[in-house]
Image (cartoon, rainbow, N blue to C red; front, side, top):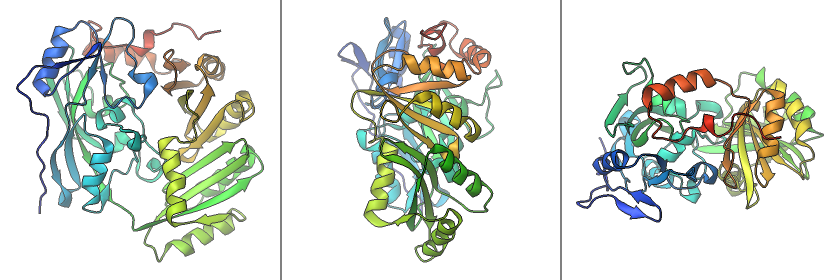
Length: 388
């Protein structure tokens, strides 16, 4: 049987004014707001502070008024919702049918929205098994720089410029259009989880554990290296049938030479803290840096002691999360020297794009095609050279 919920974004009034910004209540009002303002920055729940601060001359355009699940078919494992719908609300709706978003959206407990999650391109530690937000999104509707609604549905739908619109909007950070509606595929939630925590004598030893696990035919739900001031830990999570988990986790424990097994509330709290970035102190900046396991050792050496910069290496060593006190300008230099790029997610207003300009030519082509007049913010032009 299909379940259907009506969106709550209905209003007879025009877009209401925020403090220095706008808060449209319908998709039509979003179109009007874009057409009526020279420069706008779309904002969701404001949970990614470094991405939610409008540059000088840009008007914040809040999507919080566009909230609600438009359509949900549990038997087909798909749903559609408006951009301002919170991840927490979606979790509750899906949970009633034993389903969940497999890319594990971060900042759910802080009020993150679906639109902000897609625009930031962020996925949580659970993306290790089933892929990130780019793998779950099926379709989008967004308001273009001309103030018109553009639709892109399905995995292979492309517009006249040859762009796969749903995937193109993932990580676009409000540079290409205002997301107003999205469709996702979902999955049944595992019956239970179990986590193995292995204390390691340094990041190099933890990387060795990653290499051993990479050679095994095992489905891992989350796999991270936590480089804490108190020591380095390899964190491995399995999901599935409650009866099969003890045997599966024990085999991996023997492969890695030991470790502590967590289950229940303590296990859930560990990964909730990872997803919500509870390990990042208030006021610190947080950057996401795509890496590979072979580049982690060099990066870790440049970051200095964990007391100076906290870091976690997630997704089997494919992404680094780096927390620094104050602005991320010094990290910008480090990443540039190593040929790495990054994105500031949390922290004081300042530089958002960090390090090397990987893929800049393609990004400028897309920006020129979808926003030729520069109505939306452009992260590439924040600074031509890294700060020194």
